[in-house]
Length: 251
Length: 256
Image (cartoon, rainbow over all chains, first blue to last red; front, side, top):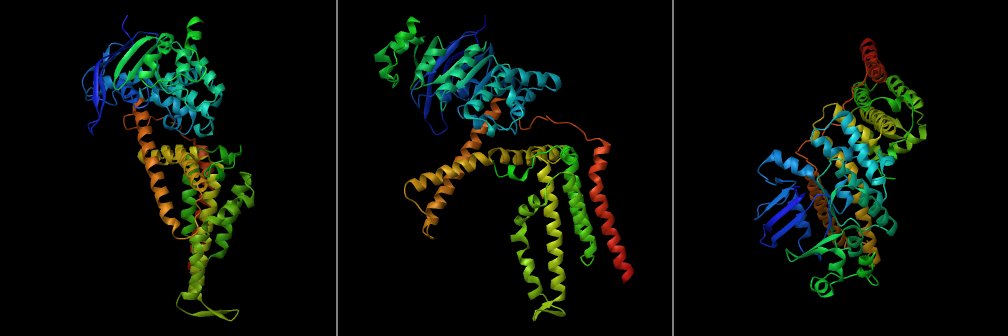
């Protein structure tokens, strides 16, 4: 089966000369849930913006469901952006339309979906995150947790090959965290979760990657990586007080 | 509640239900009719005001709701109050103060027309959600870029005001008080920081839009035409106002 995501030899330097990625190799199979861990400034966001061709121009290739990201080819790029659904960290950046319904419709409408099919997609996506009842409200009137869930729906409506979440648990209260976790585990979609919330990664993702200084330094079962103290310390990853990854591994 | 929302008064009256594009055109036409009414025809302005009162009654918008929001015009009409003192021409005495006759008429003209226009706009805003106003503009084929800018303004006004408030709290928490002109330097820096933050947010929003397939055009999500009856209903007040304006001109011409 074609993997959902194949990244090979990805390198990138910002226009000011700062090198952010030094040859990243990642393969994610269909239906996998993978966490991308790394300290601040490791290049996580830079990596994410390469997945749908927003950043490009360095070395290496990115293939999504077998399709190569080529920024020069506008038609393929549109298809790539359908296949890679990115949920950004701040839902206020992601929800820019006047109502929730219109925001969820924005993506599929750009892909040419109209009429009853568009309506169906919007309602289905909102239903999957349990937010159908706020469809006609303006996003700014929702709670932060609700906005985060609607942001997930805006991407689900595009029926992506891979869902990419940038710090999905940030700024959520414990109940909001748990609700989002329940929704995410219930979705049958390939998932890449960028985070430094290690317990959340342990809870949601069987496999983890560690990105540090622009390269992947570890790739393996999440509980195993989190239990490897020297590795964690070397890459500024710290478990919260009282959290024991071995307890998760035994579960 | 946000600033823009305060103008809106939710309801389910025939006026609320009219499609927004009809109400926009009707308001514009009404204001045109008011502006073209000769200023000497005081009775005509009374009829215009009565027309608005009828619309307000149908929309169940109480008079104090409109009157309180009309204070917004005060800075704009304030200078009209000066005209009777500074204008040239024959004078009339009022309480011993000589006032210019043409200045009085000019002041009345500005005051009456501005007030009627403001009241009409407030009625439009009271019966139409900000969101719906944009839909109306879109359906009236206003350039989509302008509608987009207005839509983003409505969406992000609260976010930016929230950021501004947090910055003010942070300044106050460190003992800052705007006492005199020396505070301007600090406030100017804050304004600059706010601008930068908003600019960066704009960039992030743009990235999020690109990620969902934005190619420079907003998708058309509301294509709904108004029926002939809805147009006719919306046209009634401005049509009557136009008749009044014409009648006022004819009357003025016959007197001469």
